[in-house]
Image (cartoon, rainbow, N blue to C red; front, top):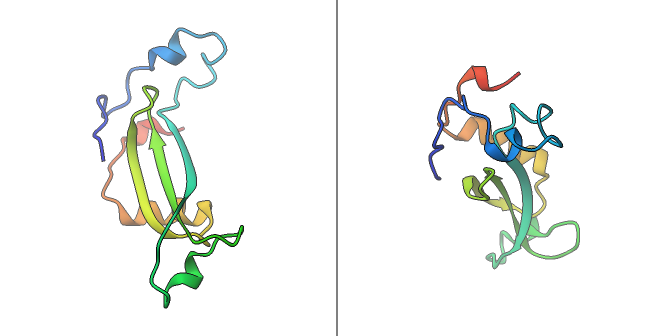
Length: 105
């Protein structure tokens, strides 16, 4: 994990601040989050759980990027059958991240 440069998220990223398409709509946004599937080699006894909806053995990886396209959080190793929303919900319970409550509205 890469630590945030502005841990209190007090500064609006210049990519938002200087672009009327995004400002003021995304002024409280601190990054982008998404899940993706990567091919995986899994032992035969665990393989069934890692077969995703396309029938391919994968791991589901959730990642967060900042506005400089740098990863700020990655959670890997989930079964290919796991839904993105499940990984997102579980990530809050498994991490020790502390975000300022003022960052969320």
